[in-house]
Amino acid sequence: MPAVARRSRLDLPKKFKEWSAKLHEMNQRRVQQREWEARLKQLNPEVKAIQELFDRHMNKSKENEFLKTVYLNALEKGAVNEEAIMEELAKAIHKARPDIPQESLGEVAQQEFGKLKKLIDHTFGKNADYKQRVANIHQIMKGEFGD
Image (cartoon, rainbow, N blue to C red; front, side, top):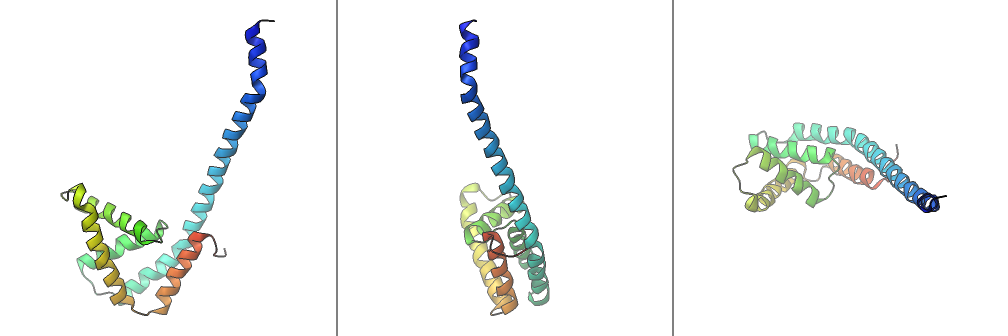
């Protein structure tokens, strides 16, 4: 028997372990993706309720509509912290106004995020329903919310 064939046969258990590990990793990613998609589906009713609250209580203006839309889209994508929401805001600003240089985009996003926070505070204030909806979104994204 040639030495090459003997060597490749000896490598089979090692290769099998490598393939098995890769397959396990792929399956883990697939499971995580399914869990993420399930969480995003759970977010939909909460985001819709927040949208209805916005529509009921918000002062209508073009800028407010833009901020509301970006905020709701960020929530639908599972953005629950300020950094993630600001990142979505920066993307939307860049898409809406490509004339803003990339270097100053973070600063503009920071200003717009301040406006968004003021809009939310002014629109909802101490609205318990809004606060409960946001709390539900946080729980869903942490995986603590029931199906």
